[in-house]
Image (cartoon, rainbow, N blue to C red; front, side):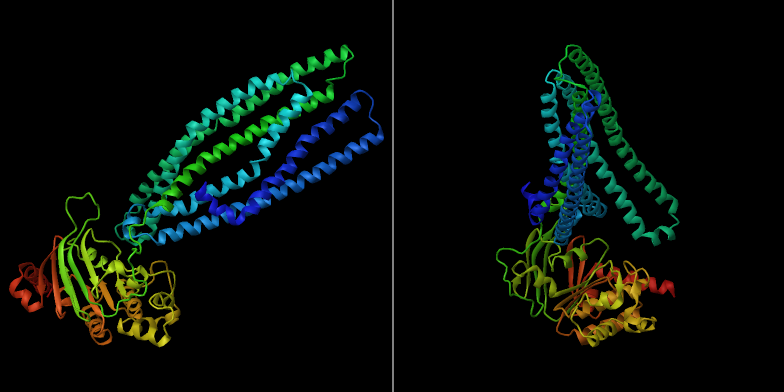
Length: 585
């Protein structure tokens, strides 16, 4: 409750006024049968005058209007409270996910996070709305109905003392069986969302491999799993209404049977303590009691699903952040030169894994130098550079920038000083200009044009009808792979970082364009440290230093010429690429 109260507190007035308004409606519900009893008794026993009829009408109409005001007010404040609660919770969830490290994100699937931020929050919103409307109304009707029924006829109330506990026992059994099924259903929604997200994101790959039928079958399986889980939950809950209706009619029938006998016996004996009007009121109170119990059980049914959603939301909020600012962080420390040093660094993606991804890495990169990293696929190149801006933290060893541990920089200042062009180039919905200004939102137009020109993106952008105002689809789907890479490089250049990392980010660019990009790097980013991960030796041949990696270890460091003399792995890569070129000729 302490966790959720922070979302209640700003709207506490709505949370209070909603139930209070519903109390007004409850008072009307309790009074109405009494007014009805007066009218029925007056009609049956010939005592109803015109004045009494008019007064009864005024009381019933006035009470109805008050009930309407209470009901509308309760619904309004309930909606205000629940919608604001959900909006704030959704904001906090999204903000928490933004703070996740790569390792945190790896623990949740994309589809699962989407479901938790949307469907699960909506489930809690609906439950809170219903709770505020029913929290006092249902118990109020129950208590008021019981008191009035006992007041009218204690002996006839024994019928409810028998049937209501049986009804509650049946409802408790149904709800206890249903709660685990709702949790399973939410998991199946995760799987379905993951399937949809993966398919839509990679639709071009699906079509290029003609795998539409496979994806349809895959979606069908996920959809069937969700349908089966939903039906399993609903089959259990579907018994609630018939069971409630059964007990309602049995109780009403017994009350009518014993109540009518009581009315007849009293009438024959000339006793007016329990008349036709009182029997009618008693039946109404029985209906109110049973109806309030039905509302309580429906609330419990919704609560079972809301509790499952709350648990899943808590998992996101309670996820311990792997990477945060450390206690010894120097808030004002910024990267000034860009010298990098890795001392005996090791890393595992899974802490209980026997084989490390990186092992005993020792590397020093001079400020302002250009360093190439080359090696076979999966040898740890991307992981190595991801440790520099603390996208992951090393398990062992230390990483220094300008002689200071990366953990002594604030995450903001550290990452602000490092520009990364990731292996998977990502652009966002919006204009080309909006995407480039991710690098520096305050950059001038001239600085933006210069960054695009240095990344060899300016020419093709100008060929678009709207130029830099061209709208990009989600993920940059309406530009080619090479154009996407150049826009991502321009975005990083606009940041003007002290360290820039290119993770195989020119693979879709022709060699002539790549050479122009490298030349721009040398001239425009002379003071910045440049790290280039590449598969082609031509991409790193002119680097000040080349690092050769194999199976998570550094197997060679040096210039192109020295590595050609001393490093067998580098020679094999070079020879395979040269022979490949000759075969292509």
